[in-house]
Structure formats: structure tokens, C-alpha cells
Length: 411
Image (cartoon, rainbow, N blue to C red):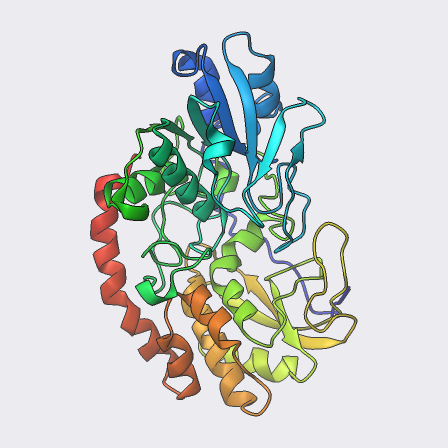
């Protein structure tokens, strides 16, 4: 529930932002149009979810199960499940797809990586899931672990590429340190990586980042025609929520920074209509926090005071922070998405919370460090280091990553 002040408004994106492209053909469309020979007469496993939709509105699993040229024998679902309706963090069970009557194996819960038993009848493994462009979004970890499992069993792996919704030319944030490897950060990449899942797959494979350095026989079916400067709403594709709390493009734009708030005792807006866009807690004075943050003149963003009450939302959010309590805080009103820097903005938010509420604000240390990929951000915020000094510290690592990624870019 949101309590919206009179002056609160959702500003439109700049008038210059218009659709630049006709509908992009994603890898799944092109698989069926041009590359059926890859899957012809093979027993297939498909790693997919509710975003695995073709231009004609069919789910890829339905299309493959109806095809006389291939045999779909198993489905694998990431966090939130095949149909995308399991709440954040909730384990998903194995089952049977009611429409295709094909077995579903969950890759989120007791098992995050396909087992040899799950893969025993599979000759080719396909991956088709829409990512959001942030390191800690778990679909990228599912991609990596599935590639690893396929490599160990000698099964070829095909990634059906989809857009990075927050552009493919942005790189921002610290590179994950080895000591903080986890399911929300398997590999040493920045928070905003500016790559598609197909490009990430190439990097994971060729850099030897899969367990024991194994390499899978990898193919990527690229999109046509996609450009790196495209936002998702410039592709002509419909927005299908990649996860229950990734409601809109606005959510995806702020998510790489706002998700860091999960690692603190401040609500990240789960349990409201605008998760990650609304941040707050019962002990925050929204007007003061908004005034402080606006004084920095951060590019592309205005902060507005807001009040909200987090509640359980069926199939979206369970037990949100400060459930049924009135929270006061800020709304992240992105007024120029091309100028906005989500991770830098998050550092200013964290530093301001620490300065304004030293006795109330607290990190959930391990959780925050896993999301950030480093411990020094938390330590520097706690030590009252200036926000810009914190941002400057990651820039050298970010530039090294930019150089590394060049050889894996497809577009």
C-alpha cells in the first residue's frame, strides 16, 4: 500500500526517447525460423520460464513440444519457477508441466545445478530466459551452473539470446571478489555488466570460470537486429515481468542500485506496487532524506518523500520488511534514464542513511557484501568515507572488465 503525497508524480521518460526499432527477433524466434537443423531429431532439455515467449505469443516449450522435428523431454526452471509465479527467495519444487505434460526440474531450492540423473536422456540443452542486466539476478547463475553440468556430461549447450533491458553499453559498480562468490554473484563481473546472456555465456566458458575449468560445446543464436544502446522498450518486444517484483522498465532501471538496500534494515519496497523504486523505514524522515539526496545533484534522478506500508502480496512478496508498518522514505524518480547511474546513486543513499540515522541504520553484513560483491563498500560507508571516494575505488576494476568483455561482445 502506498500513501502518495499530492506532489508525487511518475514523470515520463524524456520526450526524445522513442521506439527505435521494429520488433526484435530474439534467439528463440530465429531457432524456429532459421536453425531448426540444430535441434532436429534430438532429445532436448529446455531451461526456461514465463519470459520464454515467441513473437507470435507462444511459449517456446509449447512450440517445441508440438514440433515434429524435435523431442522435448525435460524442462528446467530457475528462481520463481517455469511460470514465474513463485515469490522471491521461495524454493521451487520439481513437477509436471500441466500443458505439455513434460517433467519440470527445479533449479532453485534443494538443487541449483542440473544433476546427471536429470540430464541422462538429453542430447542438447537450450537456455531461453530474459535477464535484467544485474550481476545478482539469479538467472545468470542458473545459466552458468547449467553450462557447467552440460559440460560435465558432454551435452552441447545453446543459448537463445535476449536483450539486456537496461542497455548493452553500460558498465558500473565493483567487480565481485573471490571471497564473496555466491548464487547472487558466481563470477567476477561488475553489478552492471552491459552484456546479454549469450555474451555472458561466452565469457563464462572461455575464461575458464566454470568449475574445474570445464568448457561446454557452446552455441549462441543472436538476436536480429539489436543494438547495444537500445533500452528494452526500444525493441518492440512486450514487457513480461522477468520476476514477480520486476514489474516495469522503471523497476529494472533502478534495480542494480536499489537492490543493495536488501542488505540493510531499510525496506527496498517489496510488498508495495513499486518495489525498488520506494525505499524507507519507520524511523526515516522522508522529507529530510529527499532534501539531502537532492542536494548532491546526482544525474538523471530526483528524490521525492513518500510513505508506504509493506504487505504480503500473493505470488509476489512474502513477509516483507516492516510488514504492515508505516514506512517513510524516498521514491526514486528517474527523470533521465540515459544520465542516471544506479550504483553510484545507491552509494549516496547508503552514505546519507548512515549520516542521518547513525543509531538506526544498519547493514546486514554478509547479505550486503554478497550483493555488493565486496566488503569494502560497507566498511567505507560505516567509516564515513565520502560517497565519491567509494565510487572512485571501483573504477579501475570496472575499466579492466570493459577491456575483458570486448572479445565476447556479439553485437
